[in-house]
Each structure stands twice: as structure tokens, then as C-alpha cells.
Image (cartoon, rainbow, N blue to C red; front, side):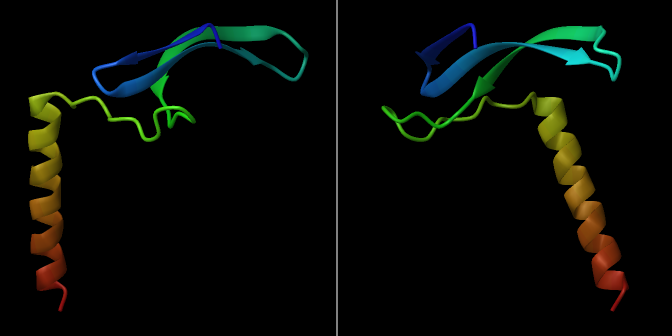
Length: 72
């Protein structure tokens, strides 16, 4: 963990991570920001996904409902 902060109702934690193979060699590095529950502030709000992703999810859900209703 490299840092933590509260921003727009989200409890954010900054982390650095690395992947190590079976020979002990580092094969990848990365950084991430994750929203986690806080002991002090409780639940964290989640970030708003992009509008085009929200639209795609609704299309998939509608198609699933269509296929499920035809399976009966």
C-alpha cells in the first residue's frame, strides 16, 4: 500500500503490485487504485462507469432476457 484517501464518498487505496514467476523473476509491475470498505467511514461508493459501458450492459441484459424467455 502506498497511500489512502477519501474522495467523493469513495475510500481509495493506492497499491503497487508485482508478479513473480516460479524462478523468482519479476515479470510484471503495476499500480492500482481500489475502492474498499473503511473501518472509519464504512462502505465506499463505487466510481461511475462510462456511459457506453452502461449501455452495453443493458443491451446484454436485454438479450439475455430475450433468450431466456424463448427457452421455456
